Length: 569
Image (cartoon, rainbow, N blue to C red; front, side, top):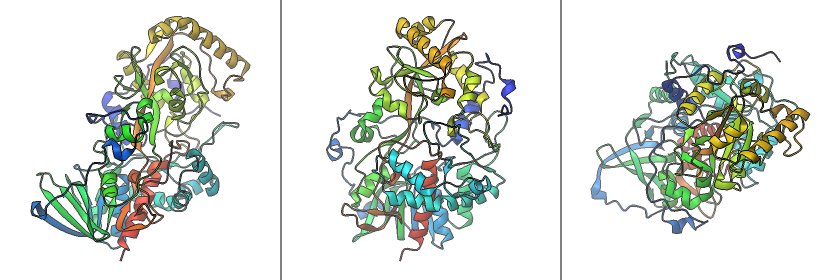
């Protein structure tokens, strides 16, 4: 294969060439579906829990009792969408397209739309000659969930995601924003199947990395406004309101702190973004997650409001809990992973399959795995922390590794650009060197000392890894030969790693029309749930080898929720 455009501009030893500005990295990060958002303050008082009963952990609390006399204002609509993020904006547009008077109640002054939409059967896939076997994809997703996922919901995504991405492509085209399909381009013999599902809009950026045009949220908000959708910003839901068995609206607080009732004659769609910023809920429901991550990068305000309101209204919550996590965080050499233990840096190169060792200097797994697998493996390692190490041949190594999805740094076979290019990644690394995260040394023994791991054990590990590279056969852990790399060319580099949390993935149980279900499996009239507030779709881990799966599911289920709510009698 010919070298991708721009490769010649990066020297073999040019570890910190092509630095990107902090502003550019921030803007790039805000666009990515798997990139951290600005970190919000953690809630105080989190207690570690050893599989405690969630109801006994105190996170749910009691539904607020708000006297009618305290309500300052009442608004009327047919379909009310709670939350103006990806699923909420897709839901609002769909409800309005289907003829319903629609309102969005958003906690802040606006929401965001992730990029990287996973789909099956889109126009772009067909144009690229890619035809995925739906049932094969569904089986793979079920494998990731240990068969805990509800197969009918996976089928619903597979059946409707293609037309959802087509619709999204049309909306982007109206603003002259291209959408690219990212083909897999796998090498023969790759250990894990990468499902070719990802589609990414390419929003305009200035040379210094700032937005030069509308982003996804602006595109959809303006489209919704053109359909007559009304937005109520700085409006945070406190509770759902029921008329008998039917959910008929919400009570919220506005910017002035006053209580507002919003009545919805057809239905309420809850999509408030999960509970990734509620550390108490994480500690109670998935304490192992807090051992795997250095910090939560979930969208600010995602504190479980929607999930708790639905439970108070009688909805059932998932029995298994999980989050989307990535192996792209780092800590300093005197720190370890685990929530609140380290200073926490964003190490985008963490998913590259370079040699990884534990704090004893020993290799402990194949490094060529889905993004979160190293986080699971690290639970059995000292301090749940590992080190990623490489030498000055990293550019050649990265091109040969040919990773997929958002860990790819050069263009895809069809010309689709990467979500973050290699030059920007090099710029991030430069900042991590300056800030004391990435360490540099002239010998592997010196690097071990700087990473505070045993030098003799690490040197023996490197020698063995070089031997495996030379024979092009990983007898120890079975990594693909083309993803092995030698460590012989100084200077050498290393960094201590941990993970970060992108969002929670467990939520309220739903049916195929996005109705919330109660504990007996019956629908709750008037209540729909979409996005990561909805459950039944994931369990245990996120299937990162289906690129954009979460965002694609959120947009697809948001579209369906809006349609079915609008058609509600």
